[in-house]
Image (cartoon, rainbow, N blue to C red):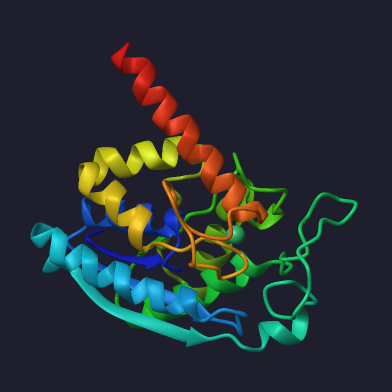
Length: 236
Ligand code: ZN
């Protein structure tokens, strides 16, 4: 169980997962999915984050293996959503944002498992989270457990899907980054990860770059405020 594959988008959550994996596994590869995102900024950020991790954490450098990018542009054919079409982000009556691609994580993990099979990797790590999940049913722990069973039956393997953020809120994800990589990793997250739905990196807030108003920026900003408030409270 020493080789792991991290689903890595270059965002705050998957960056925390990558650091978490590098602290635990002797060999860690990353996989990203190109599915016609409106903003290629995400794909650029993930390479920068990987490089900064190597530069700033020499102890992780030899553990960080290959990066893979899989072309899932067919997802654009399946979705009518703000990530792939020039549309405003909106929320449907069921509470799901129109950025939601139905079952996206099921597809991502299935492709990741097929890749892991070829790379002799049995641990799949993703940033799925039930706490802040915006109603995404493919982020639920039950969904992950069912998918792990299906993948193991369907590929006759012993994959383990690990989701270190499953029960954390956004403040706790900042805290996790601090526990795994200290202030250095928090600073790296602020400076180089990308979360904004609109692909905006023109303004630098204390929590990082973004438009500051889309749901992803709001969630990240609120989490950071709660995180810094909890640090100040612990110093009082
Ligand atoms: Zn934004």
